[in-house]
Length: 607
Image (cartoon, rainbow, N blue to C red; front, side):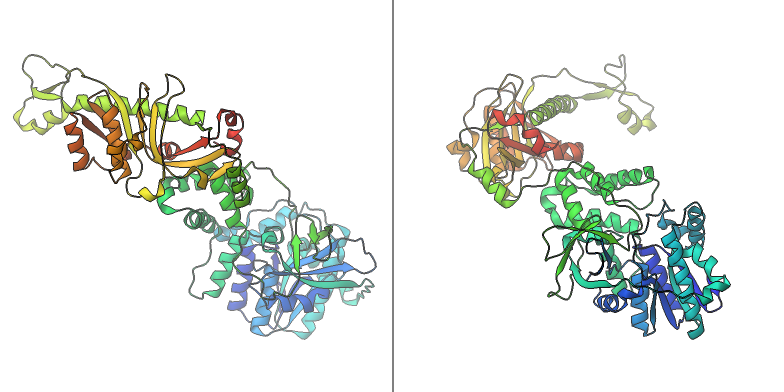
């Protein structure tokens, strides 16, 4: 909007990428003699030099010399802040950049809730600014903001005398009083006297603390900075960038072979839908970090939530000046490298109040703690996790039922209807012979025999991943005798006496009975593939003629010949018949170091 001919006034919010993009596009599409930013002039020299070091992020701190106990004021060089973008444009286009902010520093009051800036893409910038101005009509301007707006109006009058085209980047809290003071005649004749002196220092911001200093997520800030450096890049959409965060975290932190079932595209989409619902409940379009981590935990558990949190707080560019001291930043506090106690601080680029929220996530233990868990592991005590026992036993019952149904379907007879419909009309065969006008009926013979053994092969092509081969015996008559090959439990200790493993294949024998260790039988040890050893043991100890075989591929010729030699039959049920969520939960299990560990294992397993 034009305040007067020659002065273009742009109302802005700090730390918002949408405003920064608008300022950049405005400078690229128009020619200005000067860019004015609503930042105090005391920061001008330090801040301009630090802006030249972008994309490395730094901060300028100012502390009143006459008040040693006063809070520290600081400004981060946020690449997504429109004021910083205005300074960058002035430097790149080699035009003057004037700092017209009020020199007396004070803590600004948080703004009331404003419309989500994502609406700029749909409404347009000036329509969105009109909505914000309407929302700020009820905002009571404090005396400090009034003085700051009057000073900005005074400085704009001075600039109007020296420059023909001025772009003024003004904060929303100063906009309405600035327009009012600019139109008053007495603004021309004001004189300001400032006696307070400030001690300025420059710091690099600790990479782990950028989230507290920036307006956008550090991950989003990094994506915008990459887009800025590529002249052929498409404009960045924040919502699409959040979706990319989920996929990129999966690709960077998880092994694709091990966790393809864990984080399939369907599960990622479910998490994004859940995140959308959480965001809409808060009357926003752009999600917060808390909602992002909560949605990640819902689809991937604690491990994925922790890694999403790390990815969202990761910024790919470090500060260029490695000799500059590092500033630790928190909520309303900073810790300087020469201090042991944090100081109260005011981020002058923070418009809204930050608050702590609690979300229960359990990060993976450090390598040192894993070594400690392994050192205290008792080799003579080992048992399973009861909720996982119930889960796999329920699945075992379901598979045996499906296998019996498959045996009946294999013996179904179909014949032309003559005197009896027998077990019902065979619709498929009747439609196939529709041109003859005949009706076909089916006869389902009674099932013979039962299924007491189920073999589940999750992975038959990567035997080196599964060094742990064992047979577990039932604790009571409602459990199966379990034989499996799995990953090394000591490779993933997640708590004291709690090890996380993944099945490569598992065999369940029900009703349970005592059998020798399958992988220790000399005849079976000579077989190379673990899946064949497991199936051989299931065929050897099954009392029934039929064995359920759940795998992604049909039994190969070796297994079919082996079953025929033992006068048994493998009933194949494809893995694709079961949901990815069911398979994910079945594949992962935990080994506990004794029954007493069951009392606290749930706190570390988390599901």
